[in-house]
Image (cartoon, helix red, strand yellow):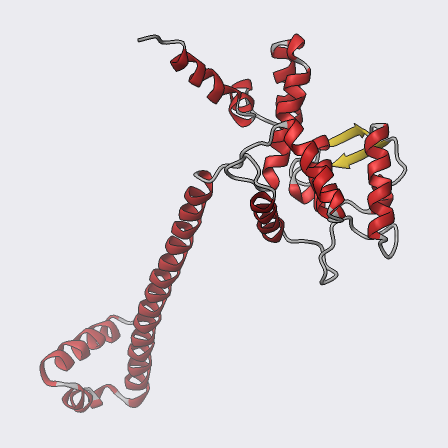
Length: 271
């Protein structure tokens, strides 16, 4: 750019600052219309650039505010649910509950509680089951939705018969139908399953504080441990692998073993 043009541009802004645009335009007519027009164009572009920059800054602040609040809400939700724990059922109480639900012709939830407790599946894997996966089978292969791990689960004869009885009473449309369909014809949401389990807890006066879908997985874990006490720590290692936990300590807390150990240490004290 020519030095005289740069000087004229600086002078224009100086005159504009002191006297306003009208005098600045009159003062610069001697430049000639080409240079004068170009000068005005440059300054218009500078103004547009400033406006765009301010707009961009405003957008950045807005998006930063939105992202910050979204993360804050997610963090708050994680804190909320981290303090809400699911408790386990004693095995005998779970079996009695399944029998009572069966007697009351609530076959879907009798089956849901039975399979959840016998197989220890996460709720999303439970909801993905269809009848042809489980009916008249000696074993079932599950690919876990969360981890992608494959699990081969044997189906005991008594449980196999129970599944068949539930199938006959529920009478689904086809073998490709999901096991746990609501009256609306859609698979139960996790939220709805938890609501129904809470209703079941109240109706049958269960000895459990927080009864949810996750309670069934914990019930499974504690019964597996109880049935393998002779294995000692190997039973915990096996459960740690099944649950995909990072350590044995996590598994002990998960199945309620650690809490009982702590309680016993207090009970051992005498006065």
